[in-house]
Amino acid sequence: MFDYEEFKKAFYEHSTIDLNLYKEKQMKRRLTSLVERNGFSSFMDFFQATLKDKNLYQTFINYLTINVSEFYRNPNQWEILESKIIPMIIDKKGSIERIKIWSSACSTGDEPYTLVMILSNFFPLSQIRIIASDIDLSAIEKAKQGLYSSRSIKDLPKEYLNKYFTRISDDSYKISDDIKKCVDFRQLNLLRDPYPQQMDLIVCRNVLIYFTEEAKSQIYVNFNRALVDDGILFIGSTEQIIGASKYGLKPVNTFFYQKIQSV
View 1 (cartoon, rainbow, N blue to C red):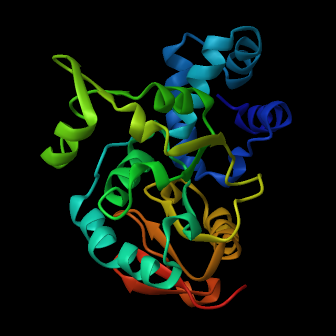
View 2: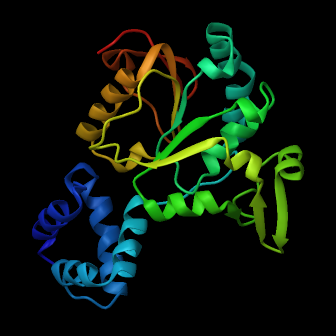
View 3: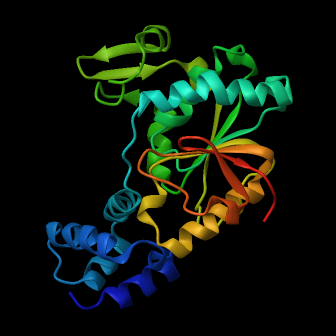
């Protein structure tokens, strides 16, 4: 299939999602598999079909955004967040009403709901409100439904599972409405849209590995500008910010970076 460049241009004009900002070799391999699996011989034939078939278009968006998420993924990192990072933020800001948290690229909600459960050890649920965003509207809808498989919750501490989930079937669990009420979901493209501002904590885990170095650099600059002074950026276990100081950040723990100056 030699029409990938034409496909990227057409898709950008239709969706404003710029595939040039994703690692090409990795993305092209994934999309080739999707196009062929759906019976198309070219990217443009596939693109034209997505314009007529909303389900196919949504399948494409889901595939593009690589929605892999679990509750309490990499447990030791969440333990550091609870034992060190959140207390540090509380010491500075005091009440939960003054603390602003954003779960970017939140996928199906596993991550922001994990944040809420951890925050519930410090504040009543009625006082907790965080922002969660993703480019994929269908992932956001799944998050709002709050239904999860046993695989999604395999690393979740039993205390949270027992307190905040109801078992629906052998492989289906529903999260409590009290937790869901704490999260404000919205659609947001990290490569295009304005970021929420004055954040004390931004969580962006296991997402930036799919972007080019140029795109990652711009996102780090935007994260810096979205954080308050001394605010914290929490990244994933597969990621590391090389030369963090040029983005006005410094490591304060593994996978946690603090804003030290504006850029």
